[in-house]
Length: 519
Image (cartoon, rainbow, N blue to C red; front, side, top):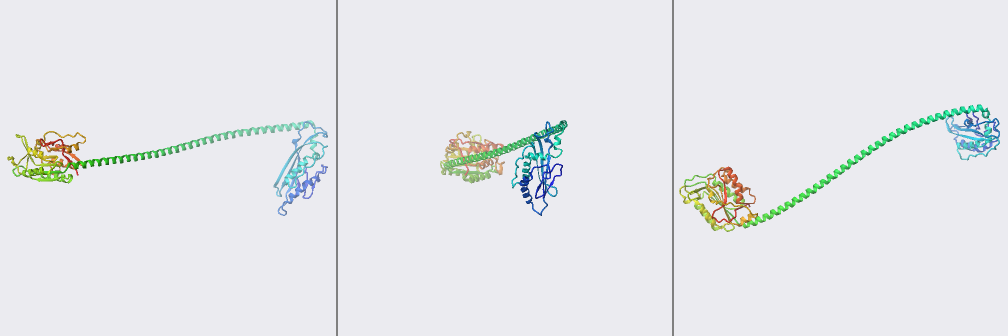
């Protein structure tokens, strides 16, 4: 490695060719070379020895020492400088260049010192053995700068003291020009500072605007986030409310179901109790018998009927199949047939039995004697021998042991059996009351007028059709008065006859009623 002078007009302090240090500048008379060699050379040698030999060319070390004009600001400069302190400014630059001219490492040191020629050289600042090159050179330069005599010698080059020895006027002019230049520089610096401050202010305003925008964006984001949270909270609350309403509805439905079950159970229990009472009442009612008479054909010139036999057969079948009656049917029966059957009932029926007598045939009203009659199949038009009077029927019904007897007469002028006192329903336990009391009642197809032999459904008379319909609609227990209520309006609307229902005069009626109990 070699040390070359810097390409500058400033003096070169030292050259180093890899072996020795030399002083190319003869103005320095002091023996400082040995001190430099003793302190700087080992460090420089170690540095260059660390480079790999033969691998690449060694770098070049450049050292340059120059004056600094800015340090010559003094109020007055005298021609003679001995005994006077003078501010001296020096700058040492060091560069380590690669063979291609690239700067590998560089540093510079500026130092201002007060100079007195008579001062002795100060002890050198020795570099440490393991310091790198820049630090080692820095220590050497520091030692140089602390040596006033060397500084004085180094400041000997032409022009340095000559400038200081000029006239005061020239120096003052020079200082004024420098001051003007400095003021201009200061003004420029102020302008630059002002521009920088304006730019900084603008930048601050932009930053403030950006911060405001960011804050607005943040506030908007916070607002949106809060809105989302509120919406989510509302949705959650609504979901919880819906779930709660669903639970309440479910609980209400369950409670309603339980209430309905309880009501059904209570109704079932009430029905069972009612059925038990009904069964007990049925057991107390005894047996049911029916004498069903239907006459179409007459032997002694009376006009035949069309529906009486069919009506009797249908009524007998309904009473037997749906109500469990012990039915005796007499079709086209004579007087003796009817009287014989009624007389037999006087012997067989007990006080707990019930008897229904259904008659469908001709009837007759003797206006002069104020008496009504049934006309059996052997009855004559002019001969009343075989007629069956209401008085006879009344006497037979009164003599029967049966508790309840009901006569259903689908014949003309059958209303003569009715005494005009209707059976009413008042007491809450009227069924039991009716069941316990003796009953002799009649359901007449009409009053004191003829009745139709046809016109009803299924080829029956109007009365028989309504009677059968009422029996079929009954689901449990139906009293005779309720049966009358069920058939009265349909018969009256479809024929010129009005059914009547009441107790039979002088037949032993005691306030009861006939009960139809469906099995």
